[in-house]
Length: 378
Image (cartoon, rainbow, N blue to C red):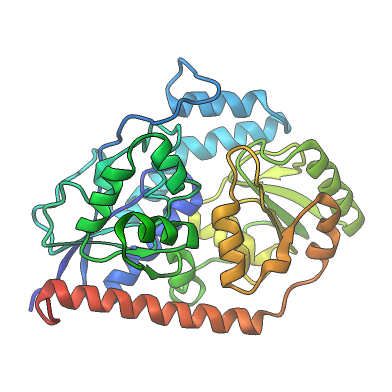
């Protein structure tokens, strides 16, 4: 039998390491199960909410302007600009992305939507918006499923507030199988579609990057720690506490992914080099989902800031830490940083949970592949 033709509709063109690594990991998982894989683009929809500070500039230029106006040394900001400028040429060939978006699904045995925040439709990001494609609407594949899809901080209450809960419910019911990565998303699916979805690990956890990929040695010399967050997200209080900890510990603070007020240098790296940088770090401070995952798979001491105000991250981060048995790594205030960054957790039970999750991920995808090729029961 020919290899099943599988498409992945994900956040593959979003320019950050987490979006790339989850897309790459899912592709590698499917290829390891005998699939011929390509990426499928979606049509961004209108935003349901407006940005707090509307800009006349295109989104990439507006984001860069925010960084240049924000905290951090000028050299780090220029390195950040270079990182963004080179991002596509470094990453798109690794995913096999064409220069122009390709939204075709009519040649696919199966379309897999996910992972990442493909269901996060109540946000002000014009690169995503309220896109029916990301819920499977209009798919012409023989079978349309999700893998570890996330609503991010979109909730049922927000969907109802914006008058789209009924549409989303219909799209969810039309999917052939639904897999989510967090409890908030599972609760949305249960309430709107009346089904209990599968729960699966994000691909950056589910794919064994350090075991299966050719990760180089760390590109950073000396003793250092990583601060991984969107530019300017670490508050002045958090930066002051981080500076104090790093100075007392004799560590350089290198920024990854964004520029912070506490920065001894910005790392302009390719995605596999970032894995190496995490593995070589003494410790990591982050407030992101994938920054937490990278700390875990590199098995470095880390502290995760769980934010419950503004554009929060509590829905996904609290769930991730709980699933891995690492709730204690959540920093409730900057005073927690030294305690968390000085000592690693016991990785043995964490490895066991990840191993179970990887087995479940392969089992879910294997079953879905068998159903789309006729080897399973429809």
